[in-house]
Length: 223
Ligand SMILES: [Zn+2]
Image (cartoon, rainbow, N blue to C red):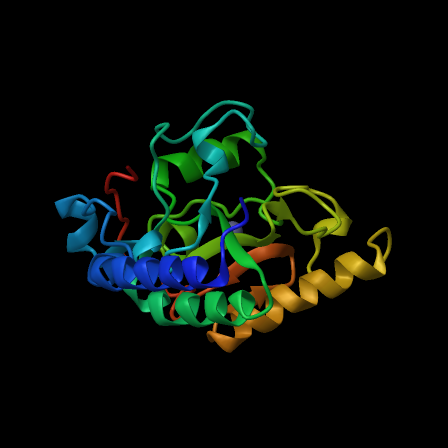
């Protein structure tokens, strides 16, 4: 039997009432995200899910699906960022959300010893930052590697993450389709809305405020 209009109206009203009751819990963004470790909190790190509740977290270095070929992070690694990136990431996500997109995070805070292992695997400072006696960029939680997903699918950016070829350069045109170039420009525009700076060497890498400043080495749990 087809429901009559009044039945649907009543059902809608009941659902609205139920959602209104549930709203205070649902409205607290990231409230179900466990707190970060005391060490991570102590250096000002936050779990990005508390900043961008609809973020897709795909920590590639927690899997063998990375250029080293083995997991470099614990399996339950989180995307930790310094709190100075939070407003910018929230803004970038808001811009993309209005277009039907979500931010996908491939890497965030990267412990120093992992940076050392990466450079040992690819000792080319054009592609892997040479570890120094200080932290900056990912090692300081002030850079992120991101892309965009729409309806559960990654958008076409022309290359995969950590593609060490000329096509991975942010403004590459050779071998990069017009659609992929436009998608990269869209990602840059959203991140720029949040004051996050693109890196010409890699389309997926963005720097937050003070990312280039050399700071004491940070060694906190990434999970
Ligand atoms: Zn990066």
